Length: 331
Figure 1 (cartoon, rainbow, N blue to C red):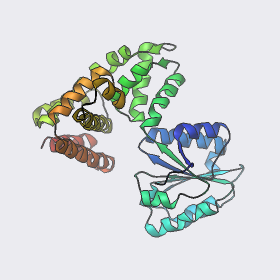
Figure 2 (cartoon, rainbow, N blue to C red):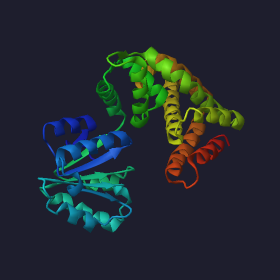
Figure 3 (tube, one colour):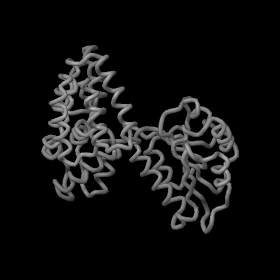
Figure 4 (cartoon, rainbow, N blue to C red):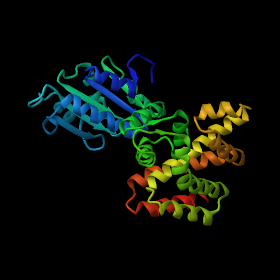
């Protein structure tokens, strides 16, 4: 994508909305769906007020037509000053439909806020939408640190920088998973307290990291028996299959990056800072980085990527699909 001043972060969007700045067209990209949903909720509250049912329209790229979306956007709102139209999975719009959508930002409705959400990166289409008045909002790891502090504040606590790093290194960068753990941490520490790194390790590390590390170790060693046992241990904690997969993927991405930095003889302190993980977590990540080749890590990440897509669309139980995936990773 081209670099321009209409590219902002999730934090910038929140600031703009709090100041009453609403763009006629937003384009949402990135992998932090929790933060996207939070931004959509903010837009509903600010744009629609109490008129949500009348003036909110939701479309999906694989089933809606561009004409339907544009006609809705140009329909005057009922009992409200503005209308909100949301299109999810814009990358799935057929080429002809998307071509028609490209023209809308040139003359957008003054009483509609249109949000185009990309479920996957599509640089060609993103560039085609890069027009005056279109605001691009990226939801990624850069927003997670600020989002964690904000979420903890909402829950009536505060959290140290070291605790945030430890939390992400153990749980991953998916804000949905982090949100669930933060709720548990606040109950554990008590409202009004500061969450320290020791709290994170006491509550999460013993309950999750040992099983996750055990599963990762088994995958790296291609030990199917140990991998299935570790997976069953995780499932007894009522972990969602997608959450398990997300944390495994996050760990292997860290392993890849750690391996690159180790091969460049970067210091441990610098690697810890770069990966934003605690020294304790870095030790285990470093051990895995040394034992795996780039080809092995790439194979695993590729299978995990396909597995994420499969779990979201599979008709068989997710636990069964995840078990099959783990066996494939060990293959």
